[in-house]
Image (cartoon, rainbow, N blue to C red; front, side, top):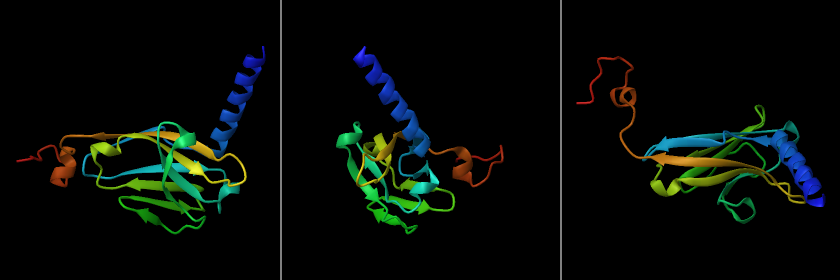
Length: 146
């Protein structure tokens, strides 16, 4: 009985956290290109630092990049993060994607004195050629990749 109550209680907190921070769940991008991940948060966390973390398990993930709580872009290697206080959304951009970028990541809000809010995002890097309209610079059906 106690295990059932604990399970229901933890499910309640998971749903509560989802109201505080949400993301796309999964994104994909082409090798060599970039992909952006929007993470939406509750307005009360507008000036709280946000971060992007890498790892299957949130408790042991490694922070890749973190904001200071301002709207200034922060970049580390090929990953950047920018917070938009008006939209209550921070965006993480991974540039020059490699197959090694495939994995589980986390949008996070650094609450410092409590357990952070987080949301998992699966990133998949696809090999192969880009879409035909991108190669040709047009969406015309007569476009050729020759």
